[in-house]
Structures are given as structure tokens and as C-alpha cells.
Image 1 (cartoon, helix red, strand yellow):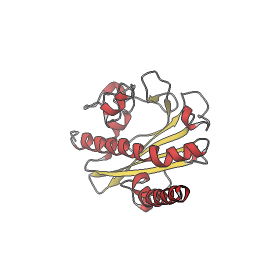
Image 2 (cartoon, helix red, strand yellow):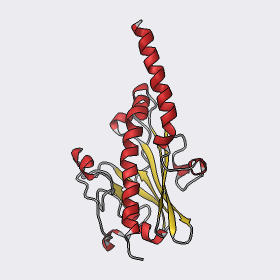
Image 3 (tube, rainbow, N blue to C red):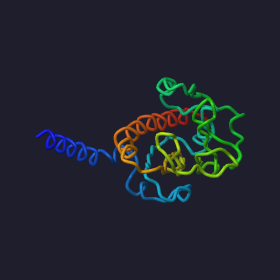
Image 4 (cartoon, rainbow, N blue to C red):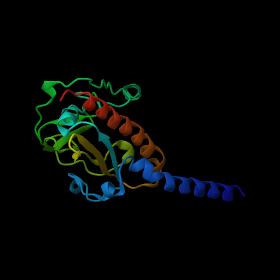
Length: 219
């Protein structure tokens, strides 16, 4: 009886996740945007985790782009929930103004770090001003991070930020993650019930934070 109850509960949870998954993984994005090829898609060949999220910004791409260039613990933070990130010791302080000294970046040479110790570095691999910023896990000059143990952070990952015109003065901001790691049962469970929702909460706040800053950026 207990086994049947557990199986039933598992079935209900799986059905609930199946229904909620599009809203979690592809928040704000249309189906056309979810399947649309974006810069950086070719860098992770066999991802086990893919998200596409999007938001409308009532400002031109030129007002959004400087905020993207400041992303990173080593620069302007992530415009999300700093307090939550700092509970993990990340020492994030999201910027509320544009800093000229964070704007001069070079693809293949500069990086974004997710932590204060520079352990989780992401190299800037695509820098198309006003159009696309793509980050890849791993430090500059090193081979791409190979997929490994999810729980040890051995993740092959790309994080793409793409700007598309929306009318005469607006911008559509799309963010896509593609990641690969060893597809173990425990990692699969974390992906479905922990990583997906947590990633959504932080990335949705980041998109809204970028939008708020860009919309008040002087033309």
C-alpha cells in the first residue's frame, strides 16, 4: 500500500511539473522565441538543461546594452535579489548607475565571475554591441568547461543575452541558458525540482532589474 501511495504521489508530482515546466523554463518567451536559434547555441552541443526567458523593455537597445556589460560579481552584480545571493557568500552589490570603467570589454579576454573568489568564471565569447552578449563557463584562455558532476559545479554552460528591436523605441531582451553535466538520477531530480524554480526566481528578478534600469536611463 505504501509503495502504491508513493508511486501515485510521484505520478502527481511528475504531472504537475510537466504542466508547470514551460512557465518555469521559458518564462516570458513565446514558442517562436523558445525554438529560435540564438547566438551561442552551438557552443553546448548536447545540453541537458535549456531555458529561454524574455521581457519587453520600453527603451532602445542602446539603453539596455550598458547594463548587460556590467553583469558580474566582479562588476555591477546581477540586478536580482542581492540579499539572497549574499546569503551564499557571493558579496553581490548590484549597480544602479552606469560605470564607464566597466564598459570596455573584449571577447575572449574578459570574463564575468559569479563568486568573489573567481572560481566560477565565465568568459565573454560573443560581444556584438547592442545585439548579443554570450558568456561561456570557464576562464579566458582555457578550454570550455567539460560536463561532469553537477553537484561539483562541473557544468558546461552558455548564458546568452540577446537584444531585438521592438517597435521604434523598445527592445525585446531574451536570455538563454544551455548547460550539460552528467545526467545522473540525483542531478535529474535537482534539475526538475530545485534548479529550475530557483533559476527562474533569480533570473526573472534580473530581467526586471535590467528593464527598470534601462527604462530610466537618459536617452
